[in-house]
Amino acid sequence: MNYVEAVFNPIPSYDGYWTFSLDNLFENSLKENGQNKFAQFYLKTYQEPLLAIFHNEAILKNLAFMVSLPNENKIGRMLKYSEHHFYISLIELVNHHLDRYGKTKEEQRNFINGLIEEYSKGREAINLALVEAFKTKALKLKDVIDKEINSEYFEVAREDYEIYGKGEEFREYIEKSYKIFQDLIAGMPRLGDFFDQSVDYHELASCFDDDTFSLMFAKIIYEYCVSKKEGPLPNCYQYLMFYKKAIEEMIKTNKRYDPRITYILPSMAKLRRYSRWNFHEEYHALRIMHPEIKEINMPPIKEGEENIYRDINFMEKFNHLYDQEITLNWELLPEGNSIPQGKSTGVNNKPSKTKDYDTLVREVNERITTLENSNFIGRPFKGLSQSFGGYYAFFYANGVVILEKFWDNEERQIPVKYAATYVMNIDNFLEMSKMPKADLISYIKTIPNSKRLYHTSFESWQTTLYDAINNEQMSEKINTVVDFMNNLESETLSYE
Image (cartoon, rainbow, N blue to C red; front, side, top):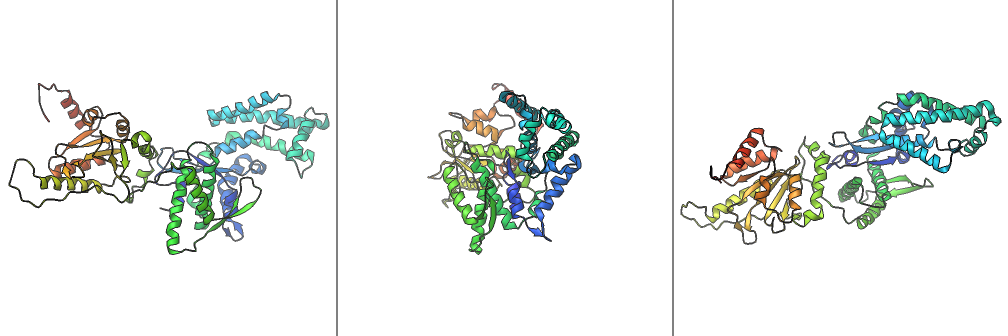
């Protein structure tokens, strides 16, 4: 997989978001003609568009954050500049001494919480609320400009100046601050959908050496993961697994492979040299802290099928196969193991109305081979409990699940005689697998668009199986027939 996609749009995809500051990107960028390539990218994609809106460079003095999050259709992920961090930085502008003047601590806290609540209502609501807050502050600053020491806000404005106005004269600081808020008031209605636009992460990656980019984001994502001190790891941890395996492949041919970056610690106190050896130590410690981390081997992905595995809703359900309730009834077939096939006796039996042992074994082997080559996700799940013992479950990227029982007794290789192939979707499978005791035949009759495929001739079974795998839902015509048959009184028509 492309290393850039592995960071920003991986397979399998996942839900949730993760954010990162840009200081390390500036620090580790390539230089071109003496220019920092990422700085040029940042100027083009963030600073210049916002400068055209606000007409004031001082508004952009705080570095932006970026956020990785799902696409709107939940197929894959995208990269954006963080709207959340942008608005939080604006809210902080109205939480200075001048803003707290004449308010109790509780009143100021309620004021800030009110702005945060407006942000949760949407962009239009927070823009209107911030414009009103900026107007109030601008009036106070204008009062200081006009009345100077006679302004009732003069002393609190001096307190802010001591913190934020270093290197400037007091009046210069006040006039500059007033201009900032005037430009914010004018610019907020023009902000529009800037933060809806995605960032071209391939262009971003071109600002870095390949090895630097890969190690840098391993460190960035590691730090994001360990910052979440409670609960499960953020889903982005899967890149750490990808990077570890990528390194293992690299050192097979180059044992001296050792990329290094300069990493800025969160405290911003100092820089630190960081290598793949540091990553190895931190990754090992993380795995000890989080033994719940699981690894899933994906099958080879055919060209054009990438988005199937980027379906976030489906991959989220697939991960539920590892829930404790499910693992009581099913286990992932261990890597390197396969479903056992039978051996024929070689004895020629006389023609009979019933199938002989060798015929049954041959048909079982054919069904095993067919399903093992049907492009399912990962590896089969093997039934453990009394309800599912002997069954294997195959999961497909479109949500279809196939349940098949090959042997009545797998160890003694006694073929199953009177079984069928069960077709359902992954939601039904998860629900069924959590039942104390599941009767497949009874349960499947209650599931819309599910069915049993009877073991008639192998060719007929195989054709029907492929149709079931490739179509999440049966056609309306077939549903009508199934409903009709199920509603018939038993004395009216008997059938198998």
